[in-house]
Each structure stands twice: as structure tokens, then as C-alpha cells.
Amino acid sequence: MANYKYPQELRERATRLAVEARRDPDTRTGAINRIAEQTGVHKEALRTWVRKAEDAELPTEPVDAEARIRRLEKENRELRQSMEILRSATAFFAKAEFDRRLK
Figure 1 (tube, rainbow, N blue to C red):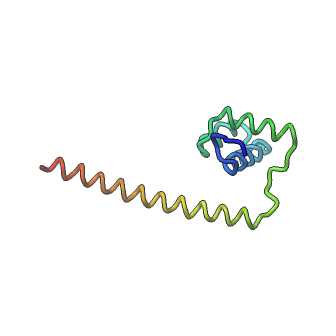
Figure 2 (figure 1 turned 120 degrees about the vertical axis):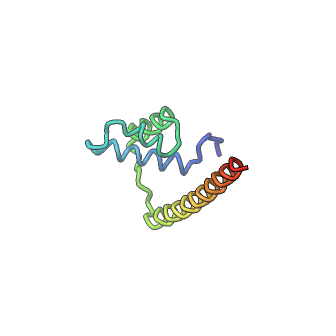
Figure 3 (figure 1 turned 135 degrees about the vertical axis):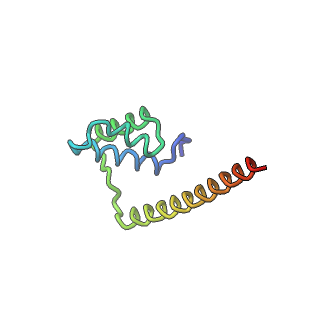
């Protein structure tokens, strides 16, 4: 297995999102930059992946839709947990800063 900067799952997901966005005339403009920013992938890396996928006309949809749904639901739960942790940390540090200024 090759050692890539980005996990294979992220590469596939970002490529799939960008290829789908580029197929739709309404979302084609700026699709690679937008998807790269949303997924945290460097835009030139994503551009290379998309070019290879489009040149090879590789299927961009996963075969097992149920597995994809499970994976996305798990990712959604993890993101919600991360957001809750960030909200708690923000409140904690805001209170600490406020208390420090009162002294």
C-alpha cells in the first residue's frame, strides 16, 4: 500500500464530489476549488485526481450504496461530536478569558 498524504477514502470521496459537480452546468464553475476547500484537500491534488478519473472514465459511485450510507452516517456522527467538543472548548476558554479580565 502506498503512503499518500490523503487517505484513500478521502481521495475517492473528494474526487467523486468534484466529478459530479463538474457534470452539472450549474455547479461546474469553481467546482474543484470549492470541493477542495470543503474537504481540506489541496486544489491541485484534487484537480489531478479529477483529471485522471475523467480521463479513465472510472465509475465514481461506490457499488454498495448501503455501505456508503453507513460510512456517511458514521462521518456525520463524528462531525457532530467534534462540533460539540469545539463548542464546549470555546465556551470554556471564553469564560476563562472573561474571568481573567475581571481580576
